Amino acid sequence: DVKVTQSSRYLVKRTGEKVFLECVQDMDHENMFWYRQDPGLGLRLIYFSYDVKMKEKGDIPEGYSVSREKKERFSLILESASTNQTSMYLCASSFVRGETQYFGPGTRLLVL
Amino acid sequence: AQTVTQSQPEMSVQEAETVTLSCTYDTSESNYYLFWYKQPPSRQMILVIRQEAYKQQNATENRFSVNFQKAAKSFSLKISDSQLGDTAMYFCAFMWAFKAAGNKLTFGGGTRVLVKP
Image (tube, rainbow over all chains, first blue to last red):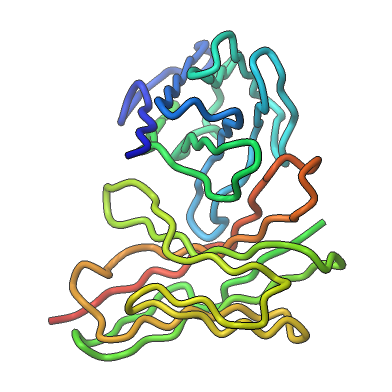
């Protein structure tokens, strides 16, 4: 079975802190994605990566950056957390030629 | 840009009955994929069913089936013989089949389904 894990299920941070969210997949997938999930808005793509050290902006990249130094690991970075970044963050991965994305359990982030 | 709309924020259904979730999308592309994903409470999102736009036959997966109307840009999900374990948030999603687009998904806002005993 495909396994996508995220470093934390729940996280509480202060405004202005630098926040790291990590995602690891064990299926040798080329593609990895970061989404945020908000009620009524569904999931919105923040960033995605199709290879090591490669990244592309999604629909809402402002205030976020990403890092992919190894194929299995994709990190989302909030350089200076703000209260409007309080949300559920979901990581996903897929094969480069595959359509199905496999999701992690999510990290619920609260910024105070 | 593609948009996906789920007009029903919440639905409830009695166990063993049938419920249909609606999804409409807007795209100028002709080659794409459509998906229904399920997110149970406090559990991981999983794929329920997938439809390729070039296939006229509606996809089915056990008790889950879709009604794909390409001209109307409609992609509804029918859950038959509903079970308590079907209680979840359901998301409709669109993916452009042009590979250089990076296999990105565009999601609808979700429909919360509650199955009552």
